[in-house]
Length: 192
Image (cartoon, rainbow, N blue to C red; front, side, top):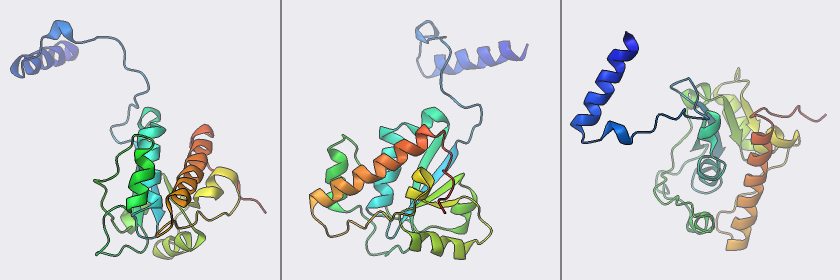
């Protein structure tokens, strides 16, 4: 009975907005989570204008996190309120992949951001330490390379560097994301 009511309401809504129910596919939807809130992966860099926005957009638009039930977001550990636009070379190297990050605006990381994320992946060890000071009991904060490989390797800041440096930075971030996604969104054990 509930299904019939839902179908009636659905067809009524479609009629109101001018859709023809016969044109709607009834094929099952694949790769959709049953949860209404996807698992959030938060990428954190310094100013949230270069590395972490590139990671966010790579994860969502290139690696299609949503299909696996995840959504990427990004924040900065040291956001300058006067510099909220994405770095021009970051915009250019992402355009090479047909990804537009121009609408991104820098936002500072909060304790709530950390607590509401399944994974928090920082670009440098100093970013990780800053976040651990905000919430020392968090078990979800990792250096990006640490999560991917178990090794502690900072992703160098490309700010003010040439386009080739940005390309290398983007590609390094992408390689780590690919590994993490291939590992089922699980982090590697820390190397001793």
